[in-house]
Length: 140
Picture 1 (cartoon, rainbow, N blue to C red):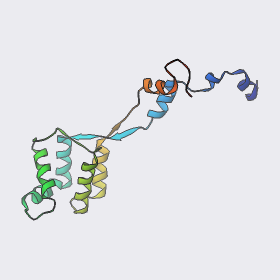
Picture 2 (cartoon, rainbow, N blue to C red; picture 1 turned 90 degrees about the vertical axis):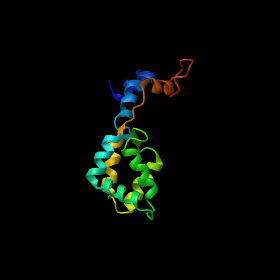
Picture 3 (cartoon, helix red, strand yellow; picture 1 turned 180 degrees about the vertical axis):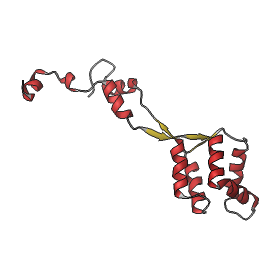
Picture 4 (cartoon, one colour; picture 1 turned 120 degrees about the horizontal axis):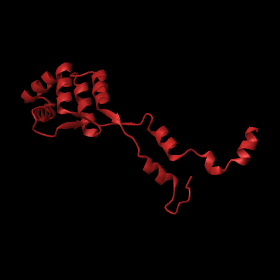
């Protein structure tokens, strides 16, 4: 049987991939930037030297980074949330400020973002909802 004959004798629905295959394809490399725990962030700060910069800027009443530094000290001491969400624009801004101040490098910024990157899968049921209408007809 030729490819054309196969197409003619195959139903439309058989030509479309199923929800499981679509879900697998979508989720293959799907990630999002999420959070890192206080412990991981603390170790990263110590290794990169940012911990010392945080303390220095927190003590310097003239530092434009003092407020951010004090907030980070509070976090590192356990006074705020248990993790830093690098999916939040304010926290990315904070990293960029430390980079611009020369406390960390762009490579170190990318490293903490990589540590915060996590899988972001879509459930197969959501794919099915996109394919099928409530009345059972196929939407695509």
